[in-house]
Image 1 (tube, rainbow, N blue to C red):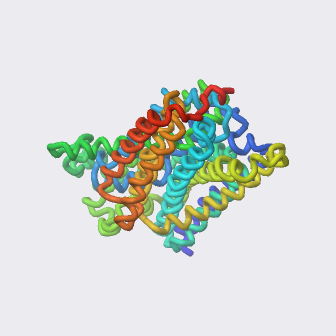
Image 2 (spheres, rainbow, N blue to C red; image 1 turned 180 degrees about the horizontal axis):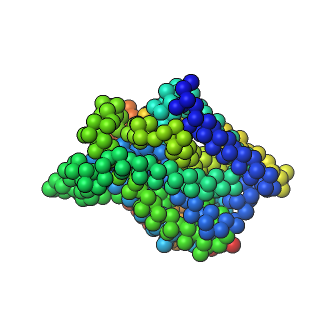
Image 3 (cartoon, one colour; image 1 turned 30 degrees about the vertical axis):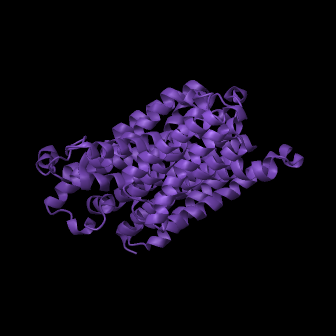
Length: 492
């Protein structure tokens, strides 16, 4: 192995090893299920901000977002970071205080309590594919980074990422996730600013970059006339901005905060930061255009896959030490999102499905909370394995990211709203809405033989419309048979 590869790889190995060490340290502080699932509900503001930002700032934003901006300009990244950042602000303003005031360990318990176990199981089952896909996206990002930069086998890189993220998440639970997220947020800032400054200088400064900026690069609204471009535009905002709101990982961040005010501030600050730093991939895409036009970077290298732009820029512009620091920051961003989605899915499996079905009514397990803790750890391994398999089905990081949360928007957005805010909704109505929204996506996928059916605008907007229509109609019809319970019984 050459010196140019050995040095950055050594830095990356040291960084990943430190994350696993943090997981081991955190595991010593895990004394019970509440420590593992919600970090003892005592996280201060800086940890809430760090973990929320690092959770969102993953492979989809850095690798996928830069590639999308390179191809389509600012318009190509409406979904992430702009719509995704908006979701954090909406959650902070309208939902997070309510979530933090509830005596629950995961978001699935809301549906179970209000609308019954069957509704809770359906909600949990829908969240699982969303976050398994999201975990797979992060593993794909690591595979692309290491294979492009260091000529490592893609599948070997993929497995390394899987083992690392499963290891520290398995040991320390949410406590390990939030501390590694905070560390990774700092490294992310250092790495991105490093590449931005060096890339800016290599591109010849602002005047040269402006001269090579593609026409309409800064367009933020549709250029075409007519209804359909605006339907597409609304779909771009709705899928990510509203699809993120019922996410279990966001709920966990609210539950872990030391109080409701801290949770609310953390979400709003994180959303604002996400918008600000979300422009960095856009500027890096502009730098890429300039360097390719100037002949510094070979444009044929990314002709087939624009998501390889970031790794190629890093390889061309940075010396071995700086390359190691940058790639460590990039992998840190990816692993922080992977650990969050991995843990959120494991909690859904254990707390919302396995425990209620198999363990809750057995007296010996009601007192043995350590049993739930062990089940959750096993589910971390299960989720990681599922994500690794799913990731091999598609290599497009940005599209998979958007699809994951579009699916959640179509099935869970309105049930989440009515569970928290509406007393008129019935169990039958919410269950019918979930199944109806899901069936639209499932039937589309089956008919087209794909997990991402087209036209995507239809499969973004129609499922939630079917969802809310069924909730309203079926709730009216079944009002006299309703057995739902008020949310107030869950308040701390």
